[in-house]
Image (cartoon, one colour):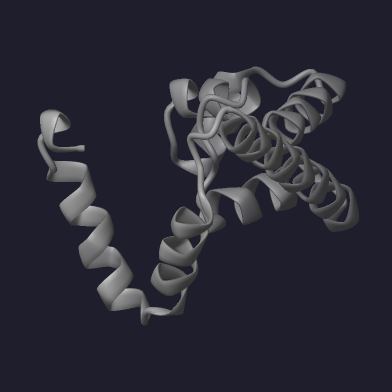
Length: 124
């Protein structure tokens, strides 16, 4: 989302508005605006909509930047996976495990995510 944040900063700068002014108008902190603009925080749907409306951003531009960001993230994940495969650290069995997890309903996937987040490091 860093590209989207930079786009919002560019629009804000073009309007000669401070982060504090935008934050005040949207009911968030100046730090929140800074984190969004620098890509350190992804705005939730309501903040994203508010920023688009307030800064008169074009939805098409925001969507294009988000799509580019998603594509870059996917490319990075694919490259990492290929590296793991080449190093022999990812097998077809791992692919099968991921495939089965993806087939689970969202509630069961959430439970698995929670278990993995609390799993002791030495058990991994």
